[in-house]
Image (cartoon, rainbow, N blue to C red; front, side):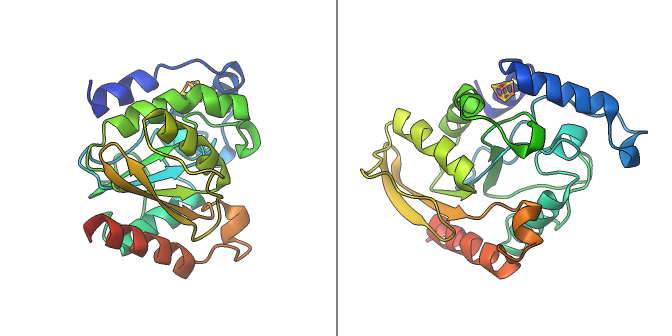
Length: 229
Ligand code: SF4
């Protein structure tokens, strides 16, 4: 099994009834601005090469972003933020992410969502998080060079730590807390693995100034330094 096979398989997943209903309803009702487009309306796989040393873990696809375009963080304002930042960090070949065929490529970085289907109100339940976590586990297991994980938001943090623990990564007690700029280096079977926290690139954070471009750039610069140091 390789990453492409996992990507293909996840796209057929229907394990969460509420999310399946929502992602498919949104794909039919659509937003007026996109009414001429065919929505993806399925789980959204990760993006980036298998030799990535840096992983980025987001929350879930946006109803009219990834759920529309079929590519993670593509076609919405959150995507504008994260891909512009990845480009500034030298991890993307362009600063924009508007459509699945726009030529965007990542280098040394794989970006994934903790939950692969768009949830109502951008809010998956803890049960949906746990139902989707085997997909995150399978994906991380297929990134053999991974050295750093940047986690966008507390939800992704809460999804990731149990997945790492199940993979044999030693998680200290008390469990490391999420915060912007949080950093913890863990003993993993393949060597040290550093987990970095950043506020999520959601509009609630970026519009309000809770997360600024320099704040996000600082976390990604730290990730690059750790991965290549
Ligand atoms: Fe499957 Fe994950 Fe989507 Fe649930 S959220 S239906 S587990 S892909």
